[in-house]
Image (cartoon, rainbow over all chains, first blue to last red; front, side, top):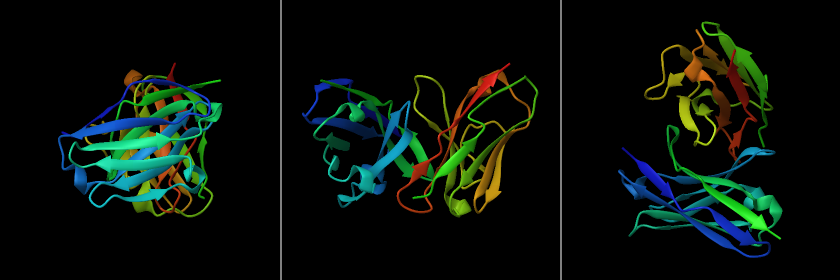
Length: 116
Length: 108
């Protein structure tokens, strides 16, 4: 049974950067794409991009290029997402999700609040 | 990008009632790459239906999915209280992957 454990809520100042994590267990981390999804009340669910931990390859939604950076540490089976130059528009819940037939396992979400 | 439009945005159904949620795509979506998720407040989305019509593990048989091209639907044959949730459609047919805005389904 796969399990994705995300890091805790973040309160960060506008203009700063934040790096959140998603630790995978219960499956071979390097064999599946790991996606990141943003959820806000206004915009709904938005796909940010994915990383393939097997080779570090990434694919980003053009909207988030330059905003989000996806990395993975295979030694600890952990995926990371860094979000830079934070604004109030970045306040959201961020999920990591493994893809197989659909996004079959999701983390519990990390709530990011950007303060001015 | 492919825009997925879900209707209705909000609906309520009585126990035992048949419910149909729709998802309309701005361009054709391969049925292999159309998914549905269920989300309850405070929880992560859960994969509910994959490849248009296949139920994910643990999903009750009263749920079904169908569609092709630009029109897809999720049907509940007989509404139960535990089905009250938001449902989102999702496509992988082309980049960027996109989600519908969701249907909030309430129990009467």
